[in-house]
Image (tube, rainbow, N blue to C red; front, side, top):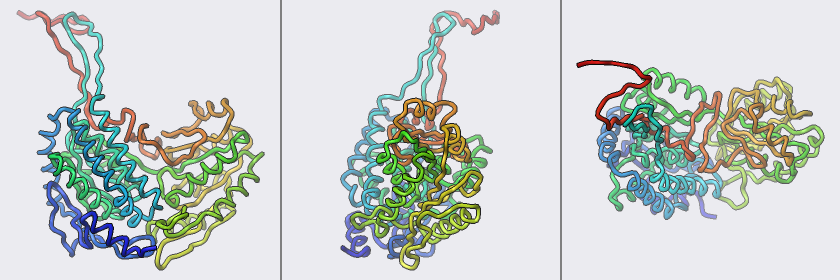
Length: 513
């Protein structure tokens, strides 16, 4: 197998990247600055990948001003034509899928199939947006007044701000950007500083596509450290909507800032997702669903399965079979065949893994398998861990971005749902059962309190066609499919009087000469 440096060099050459890359684009790339740049190392083995320079407050303002100018013309372009431009972009990304997927794997450590899946998700969202261009519907209502027409329409908002996280360094941006652009908005992107290189690679590909297809520069990119650029976005009245993916703490702070100026937010925050395994479950499907949900992306998905609640009648059997899967799961270089669990994103994530397990043990948890740091000097690898838990353990109510699974036992479905819902977060959920009554209970008002509810499939791996998002501390936002497009527009109620008088609603009389 080639070294990471060899893979990097080949991929960089084909994508037009170098060891020193500008991280700021608004119609043109701003010159790279060594003194103000992010060093990028692969979590796979510490290989140096390069540097990405970050934007200044002045460059941020220039990017916003350009997006405002582009919005004027772009919003007046017919929606079907806008959506065809997004199709051109998706077609171009498809041609670079393998290369972009490698960048994702190199920078954030996703196994090859997940890295490729990340880019495929961008392509799929683009094609969804292509169809959306002819489906931006409003409603026509019956007016109580004669010779009046009453209807509503949706109007683009303006410049949309998107702040994305490292775990889905390109796909989540596309959920927002491609939908927003189709409905007539322009988009400014502030990616995670842990995924700066992926953002540059994606934008370079898109820039080339836009230029070749005479598409105006409707997307801007401003990389930045920590909250500097994010704070500017939160306070900027030029951004009527900000979509943020990240921690609950940061999301609450940003939401307060945006709300103080009466702006809008789409928040995709914490997930502490649970799967219920009934005694009536198909054991094979349940084991695979729980294992994928807990192990995919090394437990660093917002939809990762962090808790599993198993019926007492099958608990011991399920635990032993799941333990066997965990101990056979290959952990290591995500670019190697057969690897299921790649590295953690950085040293901080490894420390969080260790702290969470220590707390779980202190609070009465019992480690069934795992609880081991496999590598620390050259990469960030940990052993996937299962912990037998009990109600009342506070650590099980926290989200830890790591392959840690807390296992509970239940006797009645009411008990299972109590355990399931007794956390602050409400993103994704699952039940494994072949019993129609259990399924319907899970999907009822007394059941899952999450934004996503799955039956006989994993908490992770949502399709782009449905609206993605959650409740409670997850933030209540919705992105991607269904009618999530409405969040990027303002609803406008229109009344037209085509008569020779002006009758008033509710029978109100107002007589003037």
